[in-house]
Image (cartoon, rainbow, N blue to C red; front, side, top):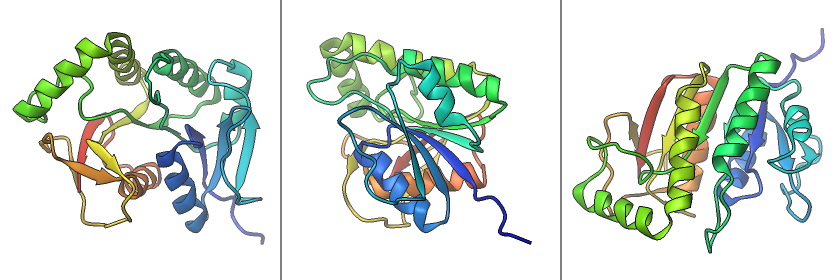
Length: 216
């Protein structure tokens, strides 16, 4: 008998730093990646382990192609400086709609510790910083809150990952995570640890329908 079909993860946001960390660890764990990539971006090497679908996050057909044969979905999209692009909620809505059509139920989505109203998880200083961000970037803030609402009301087996400041440090395996974890203004976690947590959740879900905070 031949080898069993590898676990396949549909990845949206794979060209970003956290997405690259997910790809690096996924291929080491023999997880196949199907990644949506726009023109001018790259998902790195890994010929054979990474299947690239050219398109944009507004292209419903490209999103559907990315989901073909996938066992789970990871969403790590987000605006980059100077934070003018507002697209997360619309793109996430298209992804969730396509997931339901394809019968895929598991989705892990990264947002951020300052997004939304989580009084038990946000220190007083972090709450102040979140309010400042809301005033300075109101459209981006509303977009991210709506993205979380769409995930929460999707009817799927979702997990929200809410890291504080992200670093490029190595995978530590000592990070803390939980729906009751409090994040502070100086809290941080490496992208490698976020990637490890993401892959653990898609392979062996422990936080279904929970918003999980992280800290190194």
